[in-house]
Length: 272
Ligand SMILES: NC(=O)c1ccc[n+]([C@@H]2O[C@H](COP(=O)([O-])OP(=O)(O)OC[C@H]3O[C@@H](n4cnc5c(N)ncnc54)[C@H](OP(=O)(O)O)[C@@H]3O)[C@@H](O)[C@H]2O)c1
Image 1 (cartoon, rainbow, N blue to C red):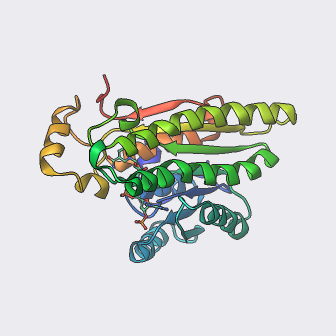
Image 2: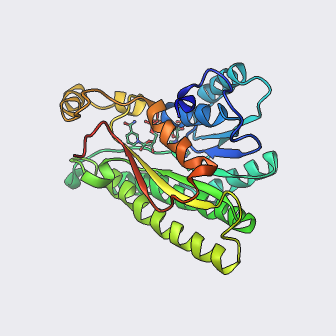
Image 3: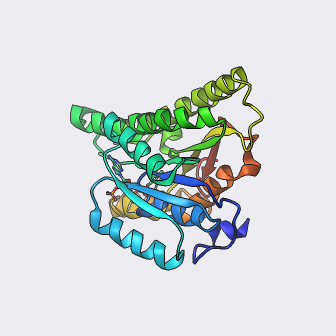
């Protein structure tokens, strides 16, 4: 499995011919996921919300590492249903299919409960939870028709433990767990009813739940809270985005066809 962490260029062709949409794919954990999937030949479509400069830099870096490999970027707010559906449609139209959907886009807007505004609540729920629903619904229509696909939702350890100042974020991330299990059950049911359960490499829906990972999102955490978090991690360090990408890649692989409705944690032992 070490090959999935190698992102300097193609290392294999296990995902050749596959198309992956990674929301929030131009930086942080999403970028690491894009590079990891591309390392096994996947065509990558990376979503983003507004950072066009970073999107262009992502494209340039990707093309340098994977010359000749198809890649695209797609701007839109996944928290708005029409935008999320348009992005999925755009990817299918541009690349001809969609095999792997990674719902990675996520935001925080922290405040303790008495100070939490309706706007902060709604925004985080709509991007982190509704966004994953809108894209999954659109992608699953296409995947169920074909009988195969992968949906991988990026949750958070906070969805399990809760956190002071993050009621909205925790609710959105734990919502992803229930949504994933329901989608895993429904897709298996629908495929069975359609006689498509045997279609290679199957259709699965899973969650990856990172702990504290060194990205811009974590850099925004105040120093005092960061230091306390660091002390809470048995491995005594923050995770690397590639360490999350490794598990997403594992779940996306054909050989993971018997894993569905599950949550995979990547947190340095933080929840023990
Ligand atoms: N970092 C951690 O420690 C950690 C821990 C647990 C879970 N997670 C989860 O892992 C995921 C990635 O985290 P990260 O740290 O890599 O985040 P990040 O560096 O802040 O990047 C977030 C990405 O999501 C995109 N995005 C934000 N709002 C969006 C919207 N409304 N529509 C479409 N795309 C949107 C951003 O687009 P722009 O680039 O255009 O702004 C960006 O590409 C998130 O779901 C986060 O909750 C992170």
